[in-house]
Length: 285
Image (cartoon, rainbow, N blue to C red; front, top):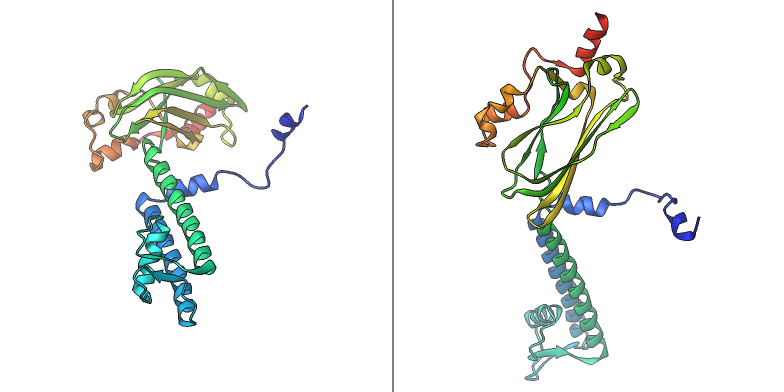
């Protein structure tokens, strides 16, 4: 094993991606506000330092007309300096003033770069809730297949979509080939996935370790999107078929504020059983 391969086997001291997760959780307006606050703080600290030096007789800022700069003049000079504009009406005076101005400009450039990078990343990233899943997955006994309900909540189609799923049954993962689709529309999708016979479920299901996983990826508004969800056996509802779901008109004309729509999206009939309850009943027969 060469050194490059050895690096792939070295565990880090902690999990990565925390900064990315933090950025994703923050609203864009808050990121912009933090950037602006850093700008103002840097200007205020620099202005306070230069004002203190002026009180001791060492003026680090000079005016082009020869007058002694006041507090508001120094504040104005630092705002101009941190933006790297420099109009010439005020300029740094002496080695100390020049050093402070250079450091201030470097700090302002860093703050501006980080703020713009963070805001750009937020704009280019798809919203966290672009794809929303039902709280339940389903096992349809008529078709002996799993069913997933999900919705593209954005205003754009999810294009070049790739859909994958696999089910862990009796300790073994049953992986099926991924499915590609030209796009995912903004209607609710009632999507059939893995086919598993009732006999295998009743015989092999282990409620402690088995799970059903579903993932979807694609391009959304020029950005890459990839989301996945895991359903435990207690999250999987057993229903005869999906006819009630596909016949519901609200899945085609989505109204996210409708209580009826929300209820149907998280569909669970009053007399339904979870996969655990269903298997337990079948094993007792």
